Image 1 (tube, rainbow, N blue to C red):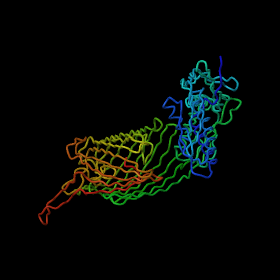
Image 2: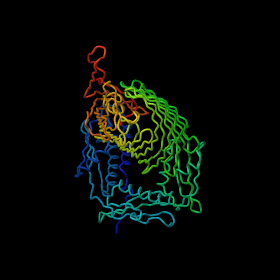
Image 3: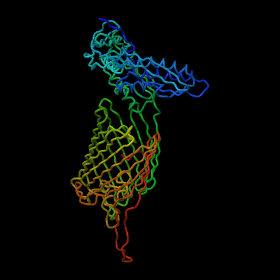
Image 4: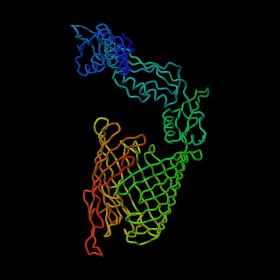
Length: 611
């Protein structure tokens, strides 16, 4: 049987593109001569397949017209070099007998370049051979099928490169950390137009995990690093496990740089895992500002100490201020990598002064959470105690002392906390309350988005929320635990807590249940600027579950988003589609006076997308 070797037959399109770019660059330096540019036309003769001709044109620097020539000789040299490169392109696509010959003619200042293309018959690959270049070692797959790699008759360099990468990944994951490819090639048989692909591979010895060796840390305990990695000493080396270890270390936000490499394989077949870390600064101070016409200006200040005790612990304090709400919170969180999850202790004090109620409250709590599915799913449970002094809108003063037992499930695979463009979020919260008043609340919510157009320049986002209370009438539920709708994070176009029932004095009453839905279309105008159009709807109800018996209020508006390194700055303008007016007879004059009216326009400025 007659075989011939085509080592260039598996060249990738990328490498050929680089070669063509180099040719174009060389031509540019040669053609820097005096005179008007030549008019160049390029044709391809013999490429009967339209897709093949399209591919050749795409990789032809002369056909692209990116370089001008004022002299004939350098242009002809470029055509000759380009014909050789286009031949390699065809051969990389499985046309192993292909040739491309240039014919360059000139008439005055007009030059015609004709590439005569003879692709020949496209070969198919019917045999795939792994050739190990080092001594026989047990555990190595002898075929691609044994390596669980799908083979195909596709002779393109891209296809063979993907097979080679999959083979190497299998070797890395089955104990060969030093496995490397030594240059694949194709042996073609012209008589049958078939070929076999040869993959020379060097694996080195098979290795088992040795000792985890950590360097570069100052505060972080080695035991914490070991708990994150959970590298099983003595088991077969697995690169995918090492890659996941690297990602988990990066996800702690404790390190600027993370490097994990296998050490040399020792005589006993073990390889130590070398972890080199560069710790970030542990303390962070942050400030934020916001503005909304219903809340006025707002400010936040945060302080955080990460890695407090050397095992990823976080101590954080946060203060926030708006006219209706001032709050301070202190939390301590301890990660439990082997769980995996964490436990948390928190303390919260709040002062609320709204049209619906006035309240001063303090809460202490603790919780435990567990992570699943690469941290996409979080299940948590906890216990907290709250004491609140509440003055309702009708002047009724009450003290509430309650213990609650929040249970929550959160699924979140969004790609960004402040500016998500992919992924989904869904949450279920169940909270029983026991104390001055006993009842239970359930909330179910979610958000998602879908992209359209090139690079998802258009984004359609949606959010929904339903909530219910069981075991108590609305009037018996502490005002701080009732459901309210309206405002920048709820139903835009209506004031804070005002997208619901309003009493005769113009004060929001809140409710036992809630329903909200938000739809927003976002159009990216530039890399930094985005336009948004939105519609929000919602209502709260006296009934335990939403019965949609009252007004379902809808607001609409537009906004702009400006991308910054810390997230998009958001400015929204919204209007209520139904403006309500409540009148009450004046005691002094006996005439009706307006005690409440929905504002015509609301403005919101904040950091991050609304959902």
